[in-house]
Length: 237
Length: 293
Image (cartoon, rainbow over all chains, first blue to last red):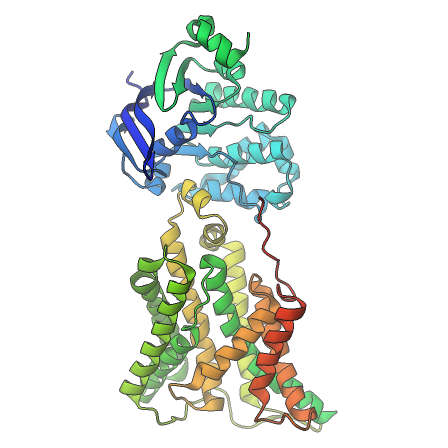
């Protein structure tokens, strides 16, 4: 089966500064790919490039079709759900309204009931807080809301931008567990960008290491874990 | 006491009109951080369209609805054609564009319809309604009713429809809205259309009282600014309450403060703006802007 997402020669720049230098990576259908890297390596930009919020050159294929250069709103309709850095919560709307917005691009909006149910099953706390303004949630709850919002799209590909950022280790564990469930039970492919390399390598079936906008290493997590440089730089042993 | 009640009701009637225009201002300000100085002239121009239709023999309410549709489309087109090209420009540029729009619409109306005042019909009967010794103008009561209906429509639209929700989302967080598949540019255009529609209601309700002429809305726009400032530029509900308050305050001060009378009424609006900005800049219901640093 061809990969769901395929990226070749991806370049991106902010003004005069080039941040991505010819990336090449893929996400298999039904797989979890993770991109590791330090601050400023270009991880977030890579996700932004895939969902069309930064200008890029190079080839991005989704399900065999070129999607580079297409507006974000159209990519969402193809089934690419993005959980952005900083979660992108609508803080002045209720939890339920946030979730409703997640399904905005769906054509079959009359079938939302079961999707609400599904999201509430993954994240029971959201059901309790559904009438609350999203801004009043804790960081972990907001991260759950952000993932829930993306799930309301019934995405084929989920882009996760550092879901562990600023959260307590237990909460992070829980979120990673649910990502695995979503991937396994609902067949959602995942592209995960993460600084917590140990966790990400545990979850993923394919990993890339990004350094200053270049892929320096790629392969199955088991092989990457044995790489001395990866161990020293990202795993800390 | 009778005079007091009468003044309050007529204050609520004009206040309702200020409220509608203030709401139009706040809707656009909320969505785009732009104060649309042309809002009043857009309302004036819509009222001329209604006048043309009624003069051509259309029944009042048909002309009313047709005008609302045209105002909506007009507002949408203005956003797409005039505002969108300067969207990324500094605020001052957009302000100047809005003022340019004000002058253009004003001159255009004068050129097409002349500057001579025209009577504009009221859909409500002429006979005043008497309750004991108190006499209420039927148009005043009708205008309050129509304004409240429009406000109710907007409330239901923004609160309970998916499009309304998407528009609120687009105003709050454009980046996340795009990630949900919301076409933010169109949401802003629809916002301008709705604001123009609300302004058109204000224009058609005020025209029977002040007569129709190209400068009809200039004073009312200042009252609308006062209303939005009093209620808070960040609060649609506040704009409505502010409008009603300004209408009533203006009437009561005009009646009971001997040196103000009708001549100095407009000054009251300006005084309200200054007092609010000095004492509580965010207005009664507004939120002060808070940024995480």
